[in-house]
Amino acid sequence: MIGRIRQSGGLVGLNTGAVVDCYSQIHLRQTSCGSTGGFCGENRGEILRCLAQGTVSGRGKKSGFCGLQQGSCTSSVWLRDGQQKEEQWTDWAQSFPARDVGEDTAACLELSDAWFFSRDQGGKLRLYDLGGEPEKDYKVVEIGDRTALEAFARQVNGGTADGSTLYRLTSDIDLGGRAWTPVGLDPNTPFQSGFDGGGHRITNFIIHPNKYPFAGFFGCVGKQGKVWNLNLDCQVLQGGSTAAPLCAVNEGLIFNCTATARSGFSRCTGGLVGQNSGTITRCAALGRMGKEIPMPWWMTALCLLLLCFPLPIYFSLTAQAAATEVFAPVILDPNAQPIEPDQEVTPEPDEVTDTSASFIMNAEMYVSIENYAGSIGLRCPSWSTRGFVATVRLTAEDQEKIGYGGNGELIPLYQSGLIAPGYGVDVITLGSLPDGSRLPAGVYELSVLLEFYDVQTNEKSAVNTVVPLEVTVG
Image 1 (spheres, rainbow, N blue to C red):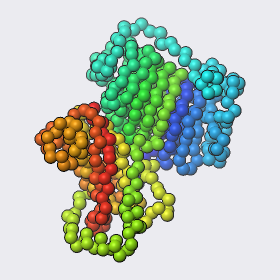
Image 2 (image 1 turned 90 degrees about the horizontal axis):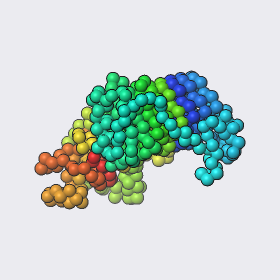
Image 3 (image 1 turned 30 degrees about the vertical axis):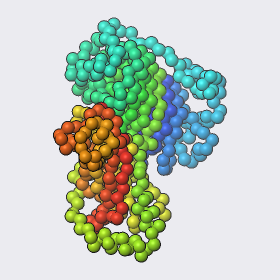
Image 4 (image 1 turned 120 degrees about the vertical axis):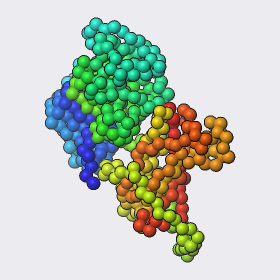
């Protein structure tokens, strides 16, 4: 399968506008079918006085600053450490040794107007907090809690927001782990007003790129939109079209904002903004991208079991299983999709045997209480010799926690069809309890049963696997 081209950058995925006096400190794993850079995935616009200070890992040559440079990039560098080698990087000439950073570094790199050397913060370059806001006459609407923030989002997405209104945060807001509906869902209903974060933070929310094609706190900021003095801390799930913590698509002005996030990859992903055709200035992005939020659980138990048992015992077990159990054909899961090449995790050659079986699954899943859908990230690597069926179950402990009067047996909430090697299912929907009720908002430690099958003979493996899945419903 030919993978879709991706653009992934520590601050912005694709830039066709202007990015000035910005900073990224993102730990990023590059993709195999796209342009990836520690600061920008692909630049067709202007980048001026910017700095990347994260890490870029992955196979092949890497780009510390910009994956594909087709625009203007002036007085901008990435900081390298002593372990990196020139032949591993496409833009080594644009790097600067981190160990040599000193008080004269800002002047040497022509960053003096935006950066300063801080002795009390470990001797690192830091961005000046220049503050300020655009000069415009606004009528002000204050936002001081989650209810008011959600009402603001509904107003913008409903097309009833007034472009002459300034929305201003008056306190920090914790969204309680909820899935967030982007403000300005698409280019037809962008955010066209002013938003002053007041230096406050909005934290603890989840961005779902598979649910919204333009996924971020703001989906689309239009040409008249302005966002400033806003700080975000969130999680961006994997998949979808365009995603970033602050804004998926910016055509307006964003300045003096920061985002701290753990992000998966979409087709276009940025640590702050996905696609920028407007202006971003004096902003910073921190966190991790592509060090996948999905956590791999390697199915080594099967291999270890076969290696530990003497061969006569092993054949005795499998023969007995074949003699006493007959398995009906397992239908392939209709929702399974081919795994993109950059999502494959390839083991070392000596780790693969003719009995190797493996799966990858998120360690955590966030489920919207509106439709009970969440991203589980189930994948069966192409090199696995077994497919599997996954069953997500509610444990007796969680049943007791919600006061469900069952008999304590595990309750299936979801069951896949057969997921064959090279395929995966990202989003699942949790079903109802036997009495027709649904899981209330809360955090649950669900149990996932994985039953492995030979996809050619439909024979079931002798060993099943059970793994935990932390689910937040909200």
